[in-house]
Image: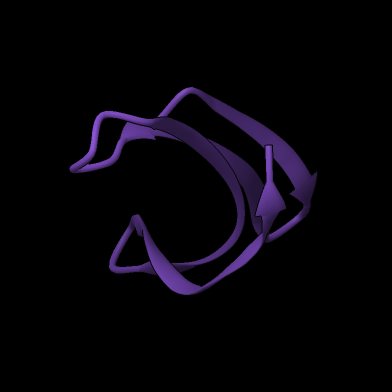
Length: 52
């Protein structure tokens, strides 16, 4: 995980950079929604929103 940016009261935008099996480096942005679960934040939903 490269960056985490607030989006709204219950979600963030996360940027991931990874190396593919053929050696290329790629980055993606995902929206991640969270909910409180017994005093902790848990991922409720996520969606790829595009290349970073």
